[in-house]
Amino acid sequence: QRYFFFPPRSDFGSENSGHALVVVLPGGRGGVSQRPYYGGIYLNSMPVDFVMAQLVSFKWESKQRIVWPTSRISDVAVDFTTSEFIAAVIEDVRGRVRVDPKRIFLMGASSSGGAVYTAALSNADVAGSVVTASVFREHQLPPMSGAMGKRFFLLQSPTDEITPFSYAQVAAEALSAHGATVLLYEYPGGHSPPWPNGFSGIYGHAFHWLQTTPNKSLQRTFDPPPASLPQSGRRLKRR
Image (cartoon, rainbow, N blue to C red; front, side):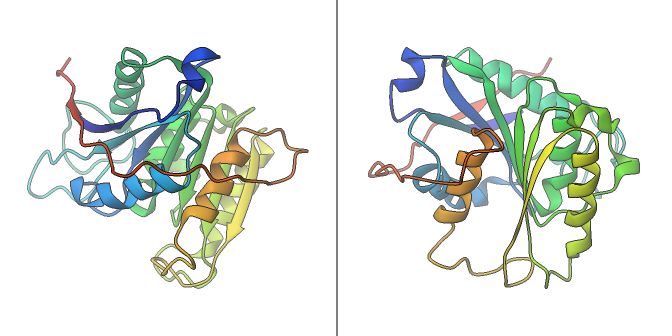
């Protein structure tokens, strides 16, 4: 089990209730190639008291097609599920920095969306999630009762031909019906659009919204990013 750790850029979290943690499951093949993309989100969209852990997917067999296997979705035999991977990383990060137990979030897109929904519904530590361009199939997920009290920021394009917009609509309705707070954000351009003015504004709103009460308005003040990305990687011992 391997992940990239992006450390806090401020001591604010350590001096108060702790740092917010975002556990990222990259879309696509889930490998290291997306580190610059999510590193840009970390630098430009996350408040300075956030830390981020970007997971690296594991290839169990050459024939494997499911990038992020779950207990209900897997085409090969695995030693651990993605939810177990996420739980192990949360615990490992807690050993590195002080983590705010009320601000543990997940982030995923496309191929990782199902695994994010699965972990969000089954892991009591997870307070909210950002899911982009993903399918939503309730019969492949844990009981929806796990959505109670959690927050989901869903991004989906109405012109997406790979994961149709209806998936996000069904997700928003089902999660809301089971006690979650959901915001569905529509964007143009299909499955992998060129984000206007980058992605910092959209995801900046998402991370701010995850921390607010439903009645608060969306506002975001961007923090100046550091000059370079952190280079640290971390590998967990098999259990």
